[in-house]
Length: 177
Image 1 (cartoon, helix red, strand yellow):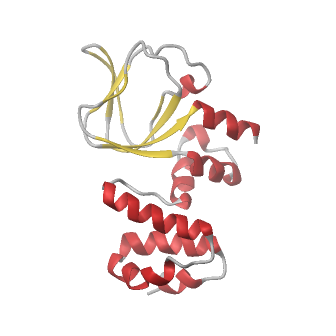
Image 2: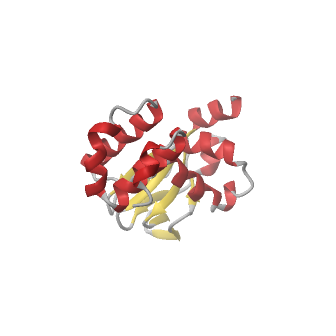
């Protein structure tokens, strides 16, 4: 009952956050307001609603921009980064859902993406030798966004894993901005 009035707040960021929150906590209430929300004057709010609908169909984890910023702030690599910069970064991140046993990175292939684990586990390995197991809030592939050299190891999911991916090209665009 506290979130519903925020759907009609004057600030678009508050409305967007309310949309995401209501969708996750009380989807039945969200759908009661759905037709009105689709006509929100803010393109960002309408985009969030469209994203929710698309993502629900794909059965992927969905994070709002605010949730991504909070998540990034909790990672040591980004802990000292100003929130304004994190908001730009969060908007550029792509969410991925990878099923168990899928290879994300193959040894020897050139790399160009950084990955952050939201939920799940991956195994860093060289053929059958496990180098490390990584879980929530771990980052891998970070050097490849600076140098697209061949990967020194493979990365395979151990369970259904939700990731955020930042591509090298997007990273350089953010730096230019």
